[in-house]
Image (tube, rainbow, N blue to C red; front, side, top):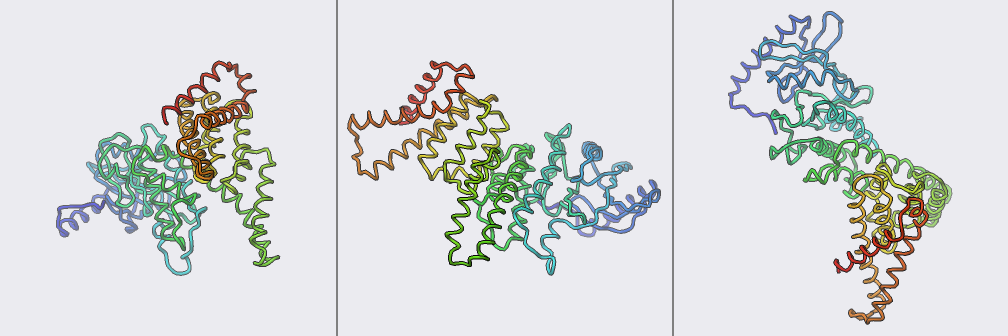
Length: 468
């Protein structure tokens, strides 16, 4: 939302001249020499200044600030992070506060993206994800300060790409303490709905703006707009959901999603390299056959390894096939329990692949059943019961789906006979028993009694009857 004023253009010009004179007097008094204006922010101009004592060039900005804004600038100045513009000094005189920052040689991301000519080139998804990680690190530093600081106005023009290729957040006076009444509104197209509606803000507000910033970059610089269900698109879509409760809840989660995306694309690059070799040697006639053969070979190679990252790579090659998921579950259950880190690994994986596995209904049904058991009996953190409930519901729903498929294929009547119902119930019990048998060893090692297991199975049956 642009800054608005009721003053006439002449009055604004007179105020700017007066502000510049007051600022120049303050700078000179502290050994700085004003050179020229180098930028214009929402709350004032940014000037290039020369520090006579050190001979260094600095950037300076003057604002008429309330005490809480000065306190925020002091908090920013106390932080040391490569992704935040450094504040060296705060100079105050009456109501004016002039803060001295490092002078950054580079261009804003907006300028970089909109550059024409030879510099204009495509920004890959991997590059955008790496930028996202840098911005997450900078935001994490702000959010973890005491009290927490929200950036509040993340957008391409507020991010500088330095000559060294690093990103830095500028315009620190646009930030604010969380839960503080003093708030700078964001910029339309980048600010979260809760900002626009002037509701309470938290870290998820900055996450929304981060997602919109990267979406804007990709929309401007990719040859074809990526579909929203692409892996990176899904991350950014989750960042920018209207309801804050449906977004990533902190920037650490966003960073992990970006890192997983980079891991996926790095592993897949090996497969791409194999395909290029195949094309160059065999030409296009046999490429489709070779493509499947190479994928299958790579899939089996990953499955034969002993590392969870290899099982994830296998799953990303064939997200609808069951073997990779089974290897993955065996890996996280190797010690007989599942902790929060392993839970996050699983959620990160399913964020990309669950919709593909759901197409393989029987495999997804078994997978949901296994996870309901794992979360109920072996999850060592809080929340296991709720996770188990969610997977029980999916297990029951997919059971209904697989039954419907069988009815359709065999043209069975809608009203099954008593014998048919008994036979179906027997199959359901046998399938659940097979799932339970997978973890029999861990039941014993964790001293989980047979009575507890049977009680849980009865609960699942009762839940199914309720849903029906």
